Length: 105
Image (cartoon, rainbow, N blue to C red; front, top):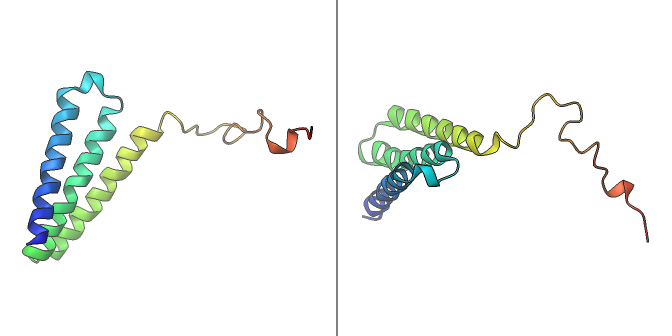
């Protein structure tokens, strides 16, 4: 069936991604974020198997929620260097000027 092939490929890709990132972690930027994304990606075939093959709706919903939390945490590991919380000028655009400060030549 297509779902079985899809699940097997996603599991293989997740394992490959986790192995590559963990084996070469000294050469990879944002190692934690990539591992969290791989685990979130791994939750998709788990949801497919729990929901469609075994009929475990509650467990599938729990795995969906944990997968989305893992994806959110992975996104935070990528974005945390670029997010500034508590600055006076918001995103720092106040001191740089913008289109309104430009001159028409």
